Image 1: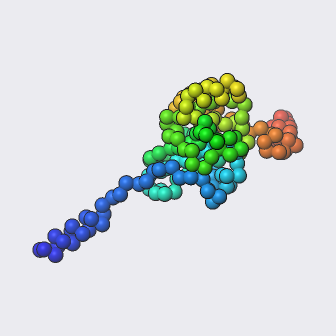
Image 2: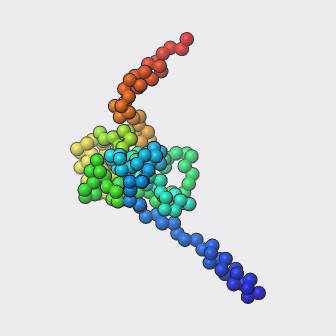
Image 3: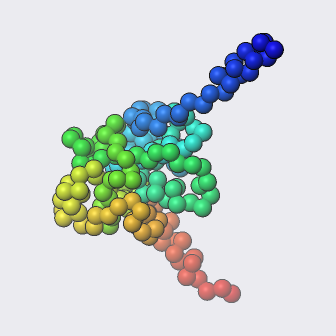
Length: 185
């Protein structure tokens, strides 16, 4: 009987669940974007990371904040989100070319400039996160756009098409448009 009780206690101790660490991880030369599978440090602009239940120590990284917002809104995204972080573009030393490797802020409390004349690391329009609302307003005053919360960002602001100039293939875009305009026959 004692053995059974000791075995049960030992088994219970082994099954004790530990809380998943959801602290933001710094970018490294090995950090790859979830969608593009490209090195994030080679792309300009703010980044995002999402910690999902069941993926301890392995958040999903995004080369653009707008990509992260799209991911979070996908109907297929059914995992439990434990934490979301974005680059604080108002942090000391943060620039568009080098947004920082460890200046993460909680995405749910960040202030986002939406509609500014800026493109993220993958060439699409970007929403720009700030911890300080005054720095967000100053960025909007100089680059255009308005400041809003994460939940208020319209889908159209994060699902915007990539410009032909960003893809570097204006001829391809022209030919694709011409095909779309051809009458059926």
